[in-house]
Image (cartoon, rainbow, N blue to C red):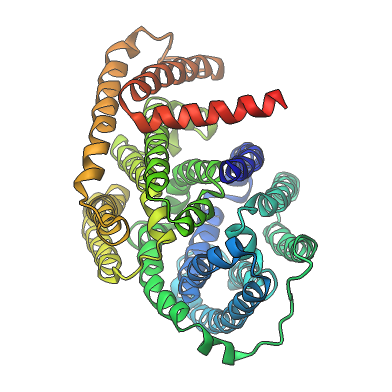
Amino acid sequence: MARVSKSLKNAKVGVFFFILSIFVQFFSRKIFLENLGDEFIGLETTLRSILSFLNLAELGIGTAIGFTLYKPIFDENHDEINKIIALLGVLYRRIGYIIFGVGFIISLFFPLIFADTPFSLTIIYYVFYSLLISVLLSYFVNYHISLLGADQKGYIVQQYFQTFTITRVILQFIVALYYKNFFVYITLELVFSIIYSVVVRYKIKQEYPWLVINSAQKTEIIKEYPQVITKIKQVFFHKLSAFVKNGTDNLLIYALINLQSVAFFGNYQLIFMKLIGLVKMAFAGTGSAVGNLIAENDEKNINKVLWELISIQFFIAGFFSLVIYHTMDAFVLLWLGEKYILSHTILLLMIANFFMIQISSPIERFKNAYGLYSDTWAAMTEAVINLVISFIFGKLLGIAGIVLGTVVSMFFIVVLWKPYFLYKRGFKKSVLHYWKGLLPMIIVFIATIFFIYIIKDYFYYNSDNITLINWIIYAIQVTIVVTIVYGTMLYLFVPGFKDFCIRVKTLVLSKIQK
């Protein structure tokens, strides 16, 4: 129960701050677009995508180190934890220098890359290096955050990160609205990144007084952990695949279409990324909890927790997918205006991508807890499929074709391959157990789709005269019906979902009775 309590604490703090962040960022997005312009927001998004590419140099070190920390944290072995964090520091410093060097070289080509943009090279370079320095702080100053995550104390990071983010966005909102100054807007990003890094570093020292913050360990420590280096090499290919899947869409849209389309797509991307982040916050700590569970090696409990997580994330995937499908167009119309509404095909593809991310998250969590990263061919295959389809169909279909590459590659590798790999190498069972357990959830979801489609015409909604009140009433109706119908059927026909509901109910009642 301690694992569940920690996971819920992470979830409560994460969700609370994340909802505040979503409200602030959605409200400010319209102001940024109107006062800074579609093209500047597109420029900022494109430069962030370039930095995402540079972050590939991280090689998945954080993931591999997190996996290595589970056992010593479980054993309360402080000496071993200090050595692993020292190893992380040595590796991150090396990677930080590489990222800066490659970033500098890429920036030399900005006069060619951004030749057709209306912005001066001065503002382009200032935005890029401000964002680059913000990224490098995590490699040189606050890399110790990995320990908080592995120890199921991610809520501490979220408290500070979201507080600083919300404050920064509010100040940027004021700058955009009253001053329309690009330089001050980006300077705030840099200043708050520096303050956040210093504060979190201090907090980590308070939380772990025995932790050696500035270790004297040098590069020789790398030789003591050959298994970590092996994991890092394997995880690199998965990080590369993740970048291609998540980080190249904006670059391809800029290359194949234009900078303004990056901003248009970015609006939808913001919604889905915030939802993905919200769900991630709700399950904050479960990754390390699963790692702790695997360390105990209780097969029966492992299987029970797995199916609880799969069923609840299947509910989340279906719930948000249905609500978004029925309410998104009107929301964007009210939020930003009619010109920002993308085609229905793009929306469906983005929903499919979101759905697959959610239902595969528990598989990914257990796969990471077992340290199963050796399927590097799968990661590279996913990246190749994504790029080839996105490039070919991006030329033919525009944004829809680019997103199609992500959806197809995810289906074959993430949805089909990864469960097979986990069951074969981790659970030592046939993957048929997985599909047999998933089938009732799929049937329930399809049944819910048809039910909503049949009754939606009876909802109170005036599509010819959409107002905020009208949309809110409609969204509430859709939300209530989806929750009742979908949730009830999952509770009745999916044991894992019922077990999860009972577990949460028991925990909540125990808290109330104290």
